[in-house]
Length: 377
Length: 141
Image (cartoon, each protein chain N blue to C red):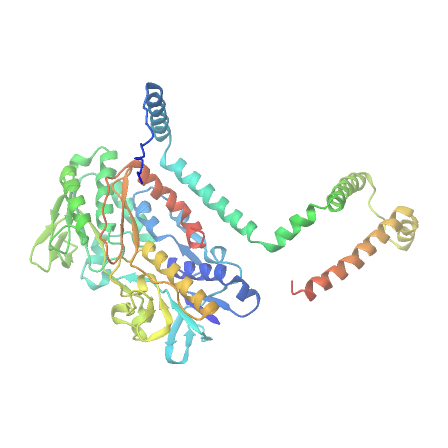
């Protein structure tokens, strides 16, 4: 059985490592092979970028050599896929090599699309890349007062990010002793302050208590960089001194180019996590079109199901489990307290009051992530 | 038939219990006050790396086999002898003059009983090592 994992992010790495553990006897007996094709030899812990943007983590803490995270029996190659030939069970890479497979796992992730909105890329700070996060921190550090506006694209990576960055801004300026000189304005695209109702219900009084102004039904149309104005499709305008954007994201270009899914999201069976119409092709993490958060946590729980099912197919010829839509999100409610949201397809999250212990749990997870992607936690 | 009603065990909360709980609470609060984000991160990092190392060690069949071999007294004795030999050789080499080279020097060295015993030991080890490696490959190791 040749198992090919395309993409070395959270989802792909957990699938590969989990499979390597489960299929150790078959791999030793040369009855199963695992190959991973990735665009980079480095693995980045993306949630850490928010901490970089507030000077709480240094960028080098976010990276590890991808090979060091993988089980030694996994054949790892830095050679991104260019063509998916699903009807022939083949992929072709950028270097021109062809890889045959019996089972394919697509874990290519997503990319931000700031360029879709005129002026957004030039006018707004964002923390979705290392460069962007460092730049945002420098801007915040030099900010001595004025108005900060937060705008949110749809869909975006990690649904909790807009509220987290807002809470963090409040605490950051409070710690610097200039919170009274900074006006924070939160603009959100739908008619409440968060897409998850219970998060909206919890965050609104917190925002009120912190003096954060909110505007809902604010979908960004364009940014007038020169005059520092952001305009919404609904017709309102927001003047700012510093603009922070949670940009819209799409699946990767290679998925769109190969016509595997609209906007780069692959149509995925919500329980089996197979690509619609292809039983030997699994999709994990940001690459799916599932109605769950695009987070490392969702990728993690999906990856466990995929690995268990591929291993059981190898061993007994049939899958044994299903994905129930489980997601577990930490929510940083400032710099020293946090809470969490756990939900699945059936049950919405029930948020608890933020506390310091949860914040430390999150801080600990930032370090234990590496244990997690190795397939241990 | 009558069923006797079970009475729940009596829970008594006395002053010393409460005092103990209060003390525990104080300790937890004091620990929370003393800790910083950096400390928590460092502890988590050490735990994460430690557990990864432990996982790699416990799943390593070769290492487990090696530990079993090390349990045998003759292997422990051999390692002690090897360590002693390295220590002694290191001391000897520090005070020995540099070799002059040439066939005469080589002959002189070869004539020493210690050199001959050493060569015999190395050749015996080589013989057993090659047999053992052949066996290992035969078993698919």
